[in-house]
Length: 465
Image (cartoon, rainbow, N blue to C red; front, side, top):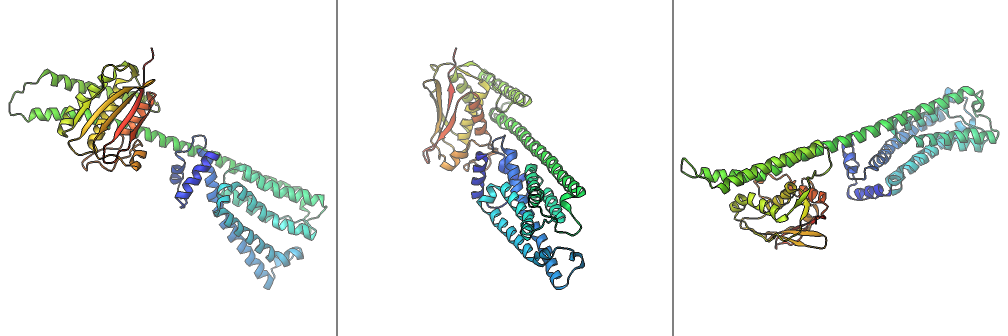
């Protein structure tokens, strides 16, 4: 419970506006631990509804106070049978209850009320219901406040239909006092001809009234829990579907763009018949094969409903992946006047990876550097052997990344502020890179070098035979 409460505190310090819709509340708890989401939602729901209930109690008590004021000047026949102590001092009791409600309002707005709405629920309920009981005990009689209890328990069940245990405790505390303390003190009921302590009908009424309220709260609580979890599941499913669609559009764009550039260059020639070198045809076929592999891998990841990236692991040489990515992006590099230096050599140990997914990483990082910098960029790809992994870097001499961007640059749909206006980026490439590297058991990050370029790095475990 401490984890989600600390997160609630951090949110409260940032935003003092109370969420007003279910969608807003769900958004607050989306990032919280999965086993705590519902508890956090229910905690906040109780705190929010408690405020509404206190307003209701305040208005209700004001109406009864006005009734007592009217009775003081114009005696009401319906109150004639009340014990004299209750009738003459009822106005004072109502004002005392009003003061209690105002105190509860103050507690509700401070740290205690936000952190312990359950205690505030019980405290306000017992304060309102037991005040008249304590007064009656001091006067030497028992007061069966059937009307007051019914309004209290019904309003609580209606406005705060969560945590039925609190409702049960609220009811048991009042009834234990009435039946237990009054019986122990041998006090009779304060109303003439109404010995409620020993009245079976009265006992059955109170029992079934409380039971129905508690069952209603329990059923609504379960329904709300199911609805909340279903909405979270739907949000998660929609998020995965969006990610899948955007991943297809994002990863297919780079190889298709390269092929389109080659075809445009060919069409720009004036000859009716164009002779193509086999290397160009081989590159176009390779790009088409890569597109097909991307589609297959994305479909496989989506249909298998696997969180993250689906990998087809095999032993491979890293320099082959790098060379393939550079070859596919040559038209883009040339169009942006980018000079790329490949320092990845063939002497590195074999890694256990998915060639298509790792191609996506190198391709996305190279294209990302080009998109965020002006033409004439200098790029350098390197890979060095560490103790038990290969450390890869992609460095540029561009405009760099500030600290605020570096903290969010791998988030889903985050777009940096240096994109060209014509860019159709969805803020997906670096997020996918992180998912792929993490799926391989590695780490990824960026080094900040304002006005000196940026260096993206990631690690890949060495293949163990």
